[in-house]
Amino acid sequence: MSGSLLFEAIVFLAGAIICVSIAKRLGLSSVIGYLLAGVLIGPYVFGFIGEEGEDILHFAEFGVVVMLFLIGLEIEPKNFWNMRKSILGMGGIQVALTIGLTYVLFAFLGYEWQVALAIGMAVALSSTAIALQTIKEKGLMKTTFGSSSFSILLFQDIIVIFMIGVLPLLSNSNKHADGYGGHSSSTLIESLPIGLQTLAIILSVVVIVLAGRLIVVPMLRKVAQTGVRELLIAAAFLIVFGISYLMEFVGLSPALGAFLGGVVLSTSEFKHELESTLEPFKNLLLGLFFMAVGASINFVVIANSPLTIGGILIAIIAIKALVLFITGRIFKLKLDQNVLLTFSLAQVGEFAFVLLSFAFQLNILEQEQMDMMLVITAVSMSLTPILAVINERLILPKIGTKESIKRPMDHIAKSQKVILVGFGHFGSTVGRFLRSHGVEATILDFDSNRVDFLRKMGFEVYYGDATREDLLESAGIAEAKLLICATNKVSVAKAISKIVKEKYPHVEMLVRTKNRYDAYELLNLDVTNIYRETLDTSLALASDALNKLGFRKYTLNRQVQNFIKYDEASLRRLASEPKREEDYVFMARKEIEQQEKLLEDDFKRGIVAYDNHWDSEHIRKQLEKSNEA
Image 1: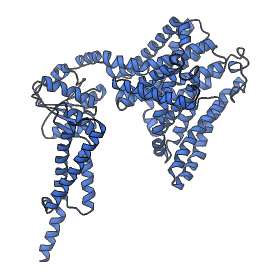
Image 2: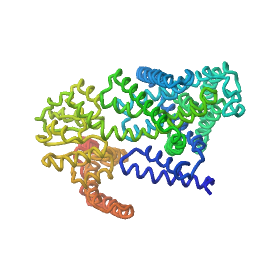
Image 3: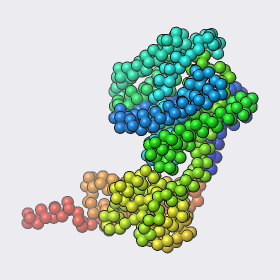
Image 4: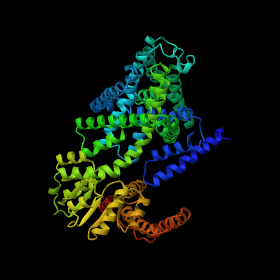
């Protein structure tokens, strides 16, 4: 039964649902849940799937293939050129220093120089899958840390092409002369002489670029002309599968080919359509990949040499962390952003599986060396989310305090009556509007690089985590009249609300939320002034639509105000209702029906039906009639 495909599918899905749900309930990254599920269902714990786990990992790498194809689609030549300094600078320094220090480590341990260099190249690569997934989950992509991480990961994804091209030059043809694992050649590269293998790698890259321009784009145009969406989905998968097969046939990484294919198609008119088509599949396949990584951790290898593997693992993470921290300091990242960067990319990434297997295939690594490094790679990836939690909960709060002490926090003006938390696009609009009316606010933001930039623009902005009571005290919360929470993170808004309600009840809070469900949580914390960011905009659009259909502007303005009044009342009633789905749906339907009936009655009773004040079109018609008379 355990060999059944359906049984394995059930095990994977059940493991993912249970473990990821537990991880999210504990406030952890979904990646931890997937990795834990993989360990539990893998061959070394419950043994539900795979004899060694690596057969599953081979299939699961397709999730990384799809992800890198989508990353490639996002890289337009113009944007790449604008980011060239951070990509080449940060990425180049990180890769070069990591290779150098890792080479010294393994040379010191007695490894041959070819082996030490090959391992150094594999160790230099961080996990694009884990890092980007975590950054996007936490909404940090637009921070300095997020852009720096993306630059380094992007450089790594590109440099791996050259690493694969260099590996054949390190090959020792005297060892395992019969090829990979004692078998006959199975790929094009294996069957070629050493001198021609690098040429074959370069040619395969050129073929992908030319095929993208000359074959794929014209094919997509033909498919689009049919108007059948399913065909475009099939074409998207055909591209990814085709590139993957080509790269496997040559003997290279399918993920590498997918990345190049994405870059080639990034300037085509089908870029956004391909992104939207593949995005839903990417997350599911990435989850499968993380589970496969967990399942591939070979506890037998660990048990045979626990001290050696543990020591090398710690040394590698320490080397990568040190290099990343130095890189961040060179590029003048603030301490909090630099520490985030250091902990997020200190693991060995998924491309290491590819490089290590290719190095073994070329007789550079012994079987024992490859097994050890594969385990170290998988364990380092598994530790990354755990290290991130330790960083967020134990290290960053202390470092944040030190950072705020170094900054001129003592100069925060306590006379300001308004404290504004969060100064992104939403918060900056609020702050500018207040300032235009002579109302200054003490502004707090947790992105230290943005703080410095905004200070140069003349805003009184201070770095710090506004969920810390000591920072709010320094900002003058005791004397403030209003606290405006403009951040888009409901967890931050809830934490601040609890502090203010408990310690500073005289301060009135105005809080931004994304949707009704966030608003329910805040209402239950006794926060009354809640502003849903989509409400006014959606009503403005609906009002304009009705105006273009012939309804009067003043009438619509009155109806918009009525809609907001009724909807706010409904929101407060529903916030106190039981949260069982069937009860909520029943009550919500009743509220919607009542709200629509009230609006309809307002209109029919004539409360707004003949409101013509400041309606320019109505006034113009009346003036025309008067002139005619």
